[in-house]
Amino acid sequence: KSSGYRDIQISYTADHVLEITLHRPEARNALNTNLLAELSRAFTDAQADPDIRCVILTGGDKVFAAGADIKELAAHDATTIRDDVRPTYWAVIREFTKPMIAAVNGYCLGGGNELAMHADVIIAGENALFGQPEINLGIIPGAGGTQRLLHAVGKSKAMEMVLGGTMIKAAEAREVGLVSTITPPETCLETARELASRIAAKSPLATMAAKKAVLQAYERPMQEALLFERELFAALFDTEDMKEGVHAFMEKRQPTFKGL
Ligand code: HXC
Image 1 (cartoon, rainbow, N blue to C red):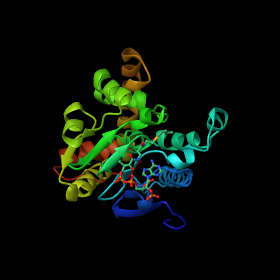
Image 2 (image 1 turned 60 degrees about the horizontal axis):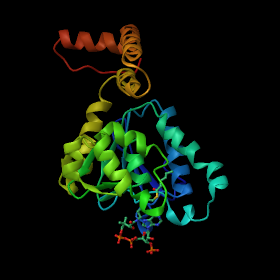
Image 3 (image 1 turned 90 degrees about the vertical axis):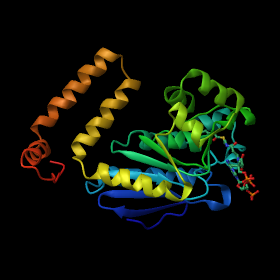
């Protein structure tokens, strides 16, 4: 399963947890087409593999990702960028239904920040720096940055970052809600792994329903989203995992969820 990748690395770091590491150290993990294609393949496989219940995405200790590969972008005009294959790779990540945690150290810029914002939870090392510097190149974010950043941090801070190319440090990123937790850089990944293991021990049917329900807030008006939530809630009552969860509680033992 781990073979054949050049610009990412994948490994199983705990039961039901897949870790994907961006690996282009020579280019600050810039997201070139090959890296995105490999990410898309890894997420497609992870989606199909019932053994995987949570994914951690990281760039390692020093840098998360410095954005789209600017050297590749330089070769495009409006016509070729409209026909670009990369949005199909982003779509696979966007449509991934299992919980995903980003563990971010160092630069998390442009498409890198957009990638981190595809995660359900962002854990950041104190050395992390978040930004959408596309404006400095005469362009704007193109993989969801204008929308997801707005939802994460609110209009004024999003506009400051998108219009001014202003970077924010980890502490501010937590303050404004872009990241959930900050840690010393050395323990960022470990903190993400602890959360991933906790999530991976839950019913995968319930965690996927929870993710889907929360994300409806971006898609639908409140009343519709509440009906959608209620239906997902109801559907879980026919699962073996629900029976296991409530019986384990009543029998004062830990549940073992099977995803059934
Ligand atoms: C291609 C990149 C790169 C990038 C860094 N490198 N970022 N290559 N695309 N986004 C390369 C450099 O060219 C250099 O290669 C090597 O990585 C090290 O970079 P340095 O700049 O020397 O490192 P440092 O001084 O530590 O600065 C790190 C940095 C800076 C602050 C991250 O590299 C930087 O500002 N990068 C660009 C950030 C950016 O503008 N991102 C937005 C991209 S647009 P050589 O060969 O010289 O050693 C975008 C659009 C998204 O993301 C659209 C989504 C679809």
